[in-house]
Length: 242
Image 1 (cartoon, one colour):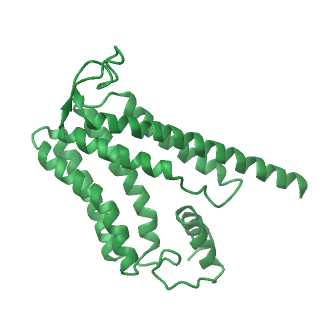
Image 2: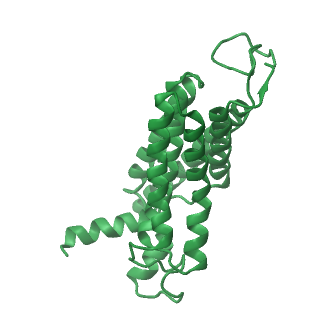
Image 3: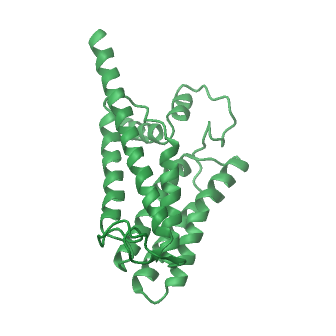
C-alpha cells in the first residue's frame, strides 16, 4: 500500500475516532480488537450489513415517496431505516465487531437519511423551503469548518450532546410529517405562510419537533464555532511561543 494511501486512511480514521486511531497508530491498544476503542478492519459484519440495508431503505423511501402513490410504504422504509441507526451500533458493540467501516459509515448514513427525509417532504410541499436550506447549509458550514480545523489540529472537535438531540428531534419530526398525523390547530402566533403550525393554519404535530430540532441545530453550530475559534487561537498561540 502506497504512503499516500496510508496517509489518507490515517486521516479518515482520525476523523472517525481520533482516540482509537492514535492508539492503534502507536500500537498501544489494550482493548480487544472489535471494541469501540480498538475497531477492526472487517467489512463483512452483521452491523455493517444493517448499515448498508439502511442505505437501500433510504433510496427506496425517496423513490416511493416522490412517486406520490406509496406514501405508507415510503414511511415504513424511512422508520425502519431510522430505527436501524440504534440497532447496528448495539449489535457491533455486543458482538465485538466494531469496525472502522462502521464508524465511518454510521454518521454518513445519518446525514443521508436526514437529507432524504428533508428532500422527500420538500418535493411534496409538506416542509417550508427554509428548513432544508438551513439543515443542509448548517451541515455544509460545519463540514467546511471541520476541514479548516484540520490545518490547526488533527483531532476533530468532540461531539456535543445538543447536536445529537437536534438529529433526534429532526428525525422524529420528519417521520411524523411523513405520516401526516396528528394534525393540530395553528397557534396563531405569526401571520406568515412559511411557519406552519405557528401561524393560524393547521399542521402535523411533527412540525414542532422540526422547529425544536432547528433551534438545537443552531445552538450546535454556535457551540462548534466557538470551539473551533478556540482551537485556532490555541494553535496560533502555541506556534508563536515555539
